Length: 457
Image (cartoon, rainbow, N blue to C red; front, side, top):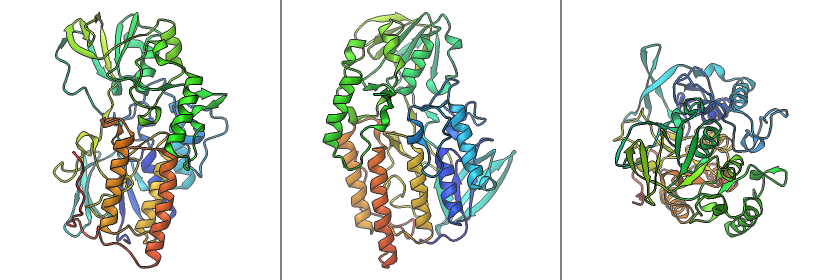
């Protein structure tokens, strides 16, 4: 495909700006629409658009060097795990360093994105209360997937007299001073919020539906995510080495009162926290099983026990949402959206996704590689595989993911950081050979093309 006209990028978060930079450096004209007044998306605390999940004390859980873009390292004086304010500053510096700020329209909300019969995209935006419509030859979606809160479904029966909020609305621990707080979840946000609330609350309970491997940020003086990074190591070897390292660094989770996970370490997204173990060991946080029922000023757990609590904080993840698409055109029920290598839609030409994945590591370097891949395609340097091969690859990736990861909405987009980059590099080279030899595919020449792919139910 060679782009006719401009491309449109929705979102100037960490993934959107990586796509902007890739297109900018290749001379591909584009507009980027950002709903907020600043770039950085989820990493802008108090973001004007209300979509950021950052809380006041948030620090990154992936180490600095693993999170940075490949050609723009974070400043050497940044700590291993910087505060969100430093990350937001880094993204602003990235935009100015590569010189594409002028292509980003801030305070601009994308209301609708509609594909036209000829394959172009009609995008309706709103800025300062005024609407306008623009035509584009390609659409890159980078609106993030940590902004639309997912609450427990179905809701817990009963009613609750106290405060209930999702972790997306959590700002700091001050509203919970001298309160009895229940934190529901076993992910990174749950651990951070439980630890922080335990500093001021009269009692904190940590409840979860299933166990998770909670790992410290450091091992042997190095950030833990710098180990086991070779994409060529087989999964069984990584799992064995990972389990050995885990036993040495953490030991038996049940000794801390946490539930023993029913899966192997690399079969689910890990939870990163060093402080939780100290708080559990000090009695500042008490663990409980999953909630069963809300009982006014009390909550009942699945083991029949109950506790009086003043607030419940649901750290239950997010939904994948595209508010600018008609749901009949495209949606992601239960966070399922099958794509070719998490970027190309198999049946809609000119539609690309950037950062719509959940790595065992940071999204930023992966979004950077995705942006470069899309630029290859839009300039005709890369050609997709044929329709049968494309559909087979999506099925194969879907089956491999289901075999490896725990079945949950959190793992529908899960990838291995190093393996994904390695395989994406190989696919780019294969596609470049296809393009240079003239063996370009025809599977996505029009939005009406139907491939032999059906998502599993």
